[in-house]
Length: 203
Ligand code: IMP
Image (cartoon, rainbow, N blue to C red; front, side):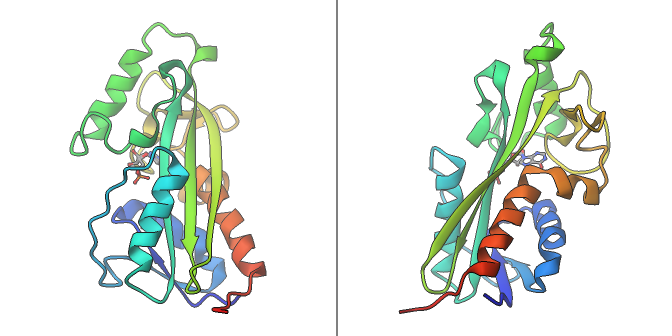
């Protein structure tokens, strides 16, 4: 289908920037819900990334005729039973700085050897089309939790997420490099393929 406009259900400016870059080749206008003039209080009370992404996309789709997409993402650390997981944004409180959150997570892994520091970023992307048709896809990137913060790019947990193939954290990757391998990049690529091949109808 031809996609003209996508409203992305997030208030996170860093994410909108990443998403606009990844979706650039669709030729669609990608705007945040704020830019679309939509303000809704959404309670992310799902227990999976997919549930939360769908909750956000549906809530915003109720206010627009455009295609709505939403993502829900997080960091899973195997040694910590996949914490912080779906709670990643709320871990230690939404307003706590990532310097503190990152230091706390590294502290919880003190003395844990390399092989047991495995982790992944997970991203679910949901789309709600004007007809009401819904899609949901997932992307992941595997890595390890580092021993110190490294890199200035990206956001959130990027400075402690080390990707062995690159020998760098995701905060040391350029935007283009990160988008090619990231959980969000992979999930959005899958969603682009689905939308390209789909014809939306109301009947
Ligand atoms: P949500 O998807 O808005 O619920 O937020 C997920 C949280 O997971 C973010 O606020 C970050 O803390 C973390 N996160 C998700 N994706 C990334 C990423 O690409 N880099 C660093 N942290 C991330």
